[in-house]
Length: 172
Image (tube, rainbow, N blue to C red; front, side, top):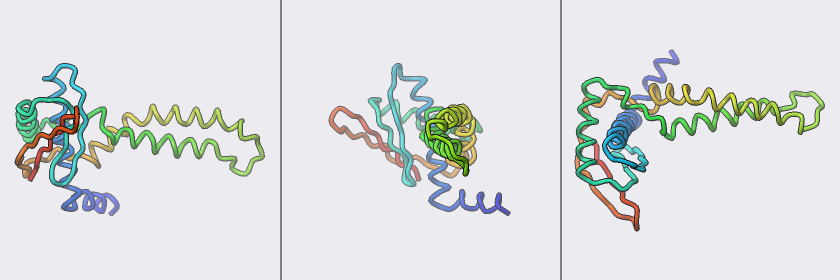
């Protein structure tokens, strides 16, 4: 019952599309990182497409998007997961915060607050270790979907904001 409800929620029109666009964003960034030396790039997905923030040629973006879409359609689902995704950071923050809070609680015992610090540090450290595999799991099952068969790339627009190069990749 809960699994069916979660699946239904993850496939709501706006949510499902963002998950697929997010997968395409990750795949595009992965390919760009393999092709462009010393690339520093970040992305952000929306229901309309995704933004790329970084100095990269528009033709490179266009090729990477087309190749990423093709590879995802052919079943290379690993491209949907990226180690530097904000999901990993959010998961690490939530786990570390909750675990540190729980570890530092007095739980009805009388103790000096300084005695709780080692437990909180240990809990935060364990959380950071657990966060990486859990972050990948959350990406794979919640924040991305490699099922991009119904996605179509529209216009790719380039903007300059001072020294920052930004691309918007429209996805329909």
